Length: 304
Image (tube, rainbow, N blue to C red; front, top):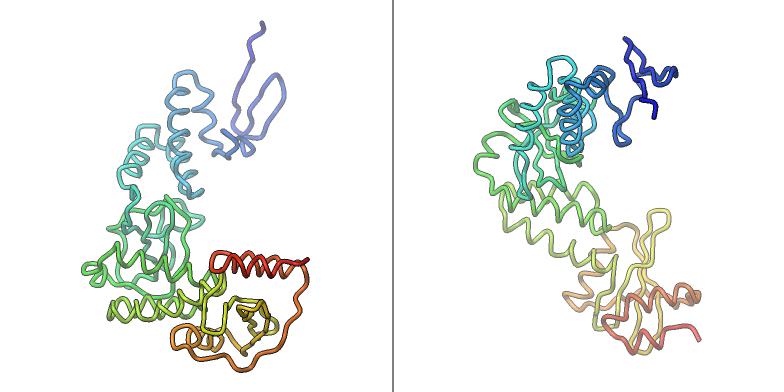
């Protein structure tokens, strides 16, 4: 069997006489820097180069992964291994830790506007930093969701990091589910930093409304569930125990939430109701959401 002849020029990889630009080089489907290809080709460095590139694949921020490989090409594999070992040593291991946000296009350098990152390795939130962030390791573990509330080092020193991280997760989840608007996420975070108990009070109606948006709620009049929105107006369904279906509405999310929370928590009846005649497809969706609360009613709602 003929041996595959592979050589490297300054800018191209030559395989069986075919020129391949080094800028197109990949390893396991991910691009690798031109200066790293020679380390993979060279018999003396190939084994360690493959090991390093495999370790670098566990770095989920692309420019940080490439920076490690470029470091190997410029300063040698030993220096690059020291960096990647430090990255593995600093990883959060499932518990929230503090990091600094790195530039999206300049390796492990800080952003031009420094940001503090809190991540457990699966989810990451970044906040504007008031103080210097150089003492924190770089976040190379997880893409960040940007928050607007600034954090100082003084706040971080006294912060219950695990509780704070949980609150941010809950606030962001409520926003994604439609339980609140994004500005309220900032309000919840600020409330936690000032008075933790107030923060939990703010979350109660938001969590309840999130359940209304995703599932269904029980009220004295029947079951309440979200219908949809149109041009800023928000609409809900009221399903009575007799399988009657009514529509109610409000001019924005906040006022609809107040209406729903009052109906469930304060037992205030919803008065402005319009009889609704859903399509068969809509009836099936309504029945699915009511089923966990009232299986018999869900069955009665299904189209005949």
